[in-house]
Amino acid sequence: MGGYFITFEGGEGSGKTTQIQMLLQHVESEFPTLDTVVSREPGGTASAESIRKLLVTGAADKWRAATEAMLMSASRHEHVVHVLRPALEAGKLVLCDRYNDSTRIYQGVVGGVPSADIEALNDLACEGLVPDLTVLLDMDVETGLNRAVERSGQGAPGDESRFESKGMDFHRDVRQAFLALAADHRERFVVIDAARDAVEVAKDVAGAVMPRLRTAGLV
Ligand code: TMP
Figure: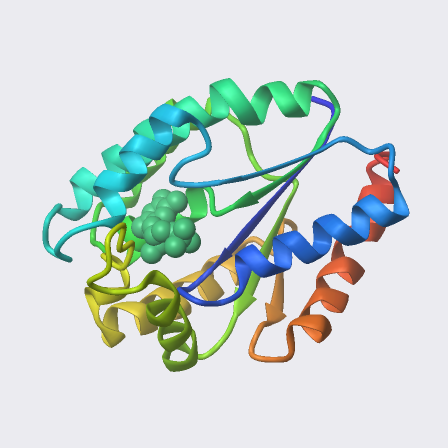
């Protein structure tokens, strides 16, 4: 498949959305003719966004981890088929805020769903679509959660803080599990210290991404 597929992963408040926007600006200024698509999970199509709402609102214990894994996978399948794969087949650069590594970590390693079941769901949802590169934005859990809670407006209408309210231990486990996954897949992951000024982080992100786009022949 043509194109180039980059996913951004990390804990709550690690700055994925900001970093995706900064990378997009950088790429667009260097290569104005390159077609790019920015998307997110859970979500990315109208129907997947409606599943997102079920997942990210309400009480922390509203869904079992296995139910979450199925809902995440259902939303992902719509996203893969209707957005990600067509964009990649058209040769575009795709920047996606989370993908199936989040299910491996949040519902699998930390949520306790057996990895064989997670991989079966991933196979069904993704039909073999694997990121070319995954940028893991790593930072301490306390700072990240504080940022995320401020942003999600706990208690306000549209409050998306369901995962934030799972507690500090849950999020510490998420951080460690992401680092372990990255260590097991060095060929695909780059780990970036996200506990710094956003401009510094963005330089490292661009430094990791641009040479790979050249190697892949995209630019
Ligand atoms: P976001 O805040 O990064 O948009 O993600 C929403 C929440 O959904 C976040 O707390 C992580 C969680 N999540 C999972 O638990 N599993 C998944 O597969 C995905 C994509 C997200």
